Length: 416
Image (cartoon, rainbow, N blue to C red; front, side, top):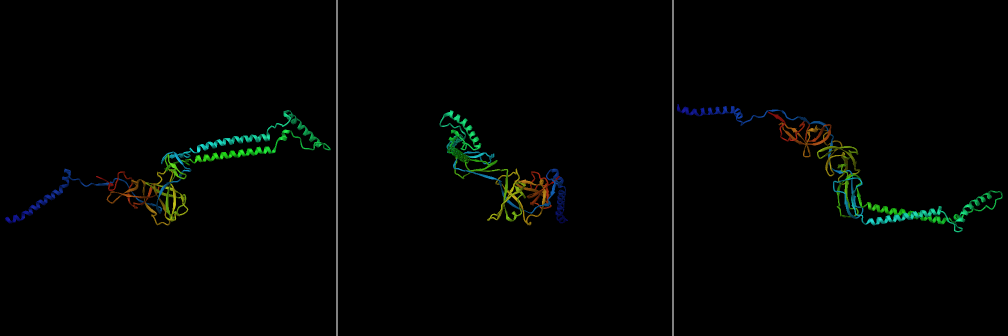
């Protein structure tokens, strides 16, 4: 009997312990909840943010080409003469009005020559005036007879017209008369020499030519003085300067570069087959930093580069574009005969696109209900929707209005 009891005791003890463990496990949630050591699993109540579906939208077949931003017009000012820099209008980035002096060289050596030219011009003007007076005197001035004095001259001027009238009357009478000769002249008229008048005219014309020559020498000096100053041809900005005040420069040496930063072009090198698809005036989608815009093709070079076999294309950016010369940009050029991006691409609203740094991105809802950030490559825009060339697929669920602090791994559901 004792041996039977010893054999069944372990079994009874094991059953008792197993029942206690089962009872403890059954009451564990309530006990843990009451003591704060255990919290129940959250219950998902629904989406915390609205989602939109990436729906198909048309997207042209385009090829991506990189290029650089450059000013539409750049003017390089160079020294026309050797000299020393005495004036600089500003430094890089300073705006210049049209006609403003940008760089000036010393003109000390030209000033004495300039004053001498003005003195010579004044002397030639006086000589020309004197020659003009002498010529007028020879042609129309009052003459003093060489004999007889003023009384005889008055008698001649009174009697000579009557004598010539009488001669004319006698020539008209029957049989003629003594008036068949030339009319009588006064001594003053007889003393007017054609050769003297011709000499006076020649002297006047020589002085007139000398005056023109003096003015030409003065104009040449004005030009040389003007060449000592480099002037902005239009309203622009100093892009680069190559000299400082006090520098000695030689003719042909660069002084400064000017450009209008409000008129910019995107310069790209396109394969010849792509360039054939474009013409001046076409609109190109362009990506700059984190902005997308349309640019107008303004110039297509007539020939291809013999080494790279590419054609240079310039697209004019809209006025006021937030860009600077030297920046990188992307242009999307249509490809001949397809072979590129699908004609249909997923499209999402603009509000679903955020920028992380300079890269466009969107948050996709994964099967676990968490946000997953995708980096995007944007295509063309139509109304409020943007075609996505890479980063999304048609049917993806995208957060419609991502919060600024949303990040990958965040739950998109409300919990209880």
